[in-house]
Every structure is written in C-alpha cells, then in structure tokens.
Length: 235
Image (cartoon, rainbow, N blue to C red; front, side, top):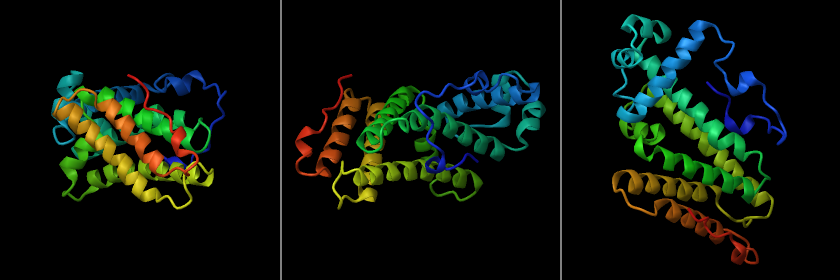
C-alpha cells in the first residue's frame, strides 16, 4: 500500500529526480519489468471494461502470454484487481498530488489539486475513471477489492480536506468554512463532470466544473477577498 498522501514530505521545487525514479522499470530484474508491463496493460484494460471485466485470461490474451504466466505474477484475479487499483492510485499521485504540493499552501495548492484532477478526468473521458467506475461496481460488494478501492479514495479525500484546512489557516478561506462540506461539493463537481462529459457527451463541461469550483471558493472566502476570486481558465 502506498503511504497516505498527507504524511509524505513536501519535495523542494528544484528537486531533480534520478533516472530510475522517472523510469521505474529501468534497472529492475526482468521479472519485475514483466510484472510492470502486465500491470500497465491491466490498467488500460480495466479502464475500458471495468475491474469486474478484468480477468487473468483476458489479460493473458492482451499480453500474448499464457494464463499461467500471468497467474504467476498475481496469484489470483482478486490480487490482480487490487494491484491495478494501487497502480492507478500511484499514477494519480504522480499526475495530481505530487505536482500540487509544490504550490504554496492555501488556495494556490487547493486550486492546483482541483485543476489537475479535472485535467485527469478530462483525459479519461474516452476510457473511464477506475475510482468512479469501481465505486459503481463495488458499492454494495464487501471484500478486499472494495476495501482497497475505498482506501485509495479516502486517502485522496483526506489530502483535499487537509488542503482546505490549510487554506483556512492561511486566511484564504473564512475561519468558519466547513472543510467537509467543501470537500463534498468539490467531489460532486468531479462526479458531475464525469457523468455529463462521458455519459451525456455534453460540451463545455470542463469550464462549468471550473466555474463551479470558483463559486465554491468565493462562497467561503472572507468578504474582502471574495471579489478577487480568479475566473475559470479558458480551455
């Protein structure tokens, strides 16, 4: 399991990562490289058919491997599903969370988290979001897969809540702002964006999500700061 997002140290903005960090498969034993390649294919497959559509057989066909070869790396369909959830979460961290914590505390960081989240959802319109599709598949199905999925979502929500509380502490949001209510409304914007863009195929959904986010911020800003709320960026 990855470490909870909020407990990770904030990297300096001028940090230079070694090549191994940028390309984790380099220098790995062949078995680990094969497993990483299988996971990448599994993630793409799950994005198309959902976690429930993921199977050892289907993945073996995609990878042009034997079922026993794929099975040797995961041991069961359930472990494969959980590994895909973890891999998805790792990519989400890399694209959304880690760049955002390099921003100053308060609204700059919170805005970055939301804007990068929206950008990722926009990219996933044609494939699907495992967090969202997985919630539909496993909302009433207790077990390890649901637990893993819920844990990753909670981790991200906790990071967002912490960013909201920091914005309150920095004075960017009112002292009486309710972090959990703001989190609920912000998450609601993402769900609406995914639904209207992917299912309804409406245009302009990204802009509407950004305007909704700015409205939430404005509603919770100190009176003197509210008129200076930044407009939604043009896309």
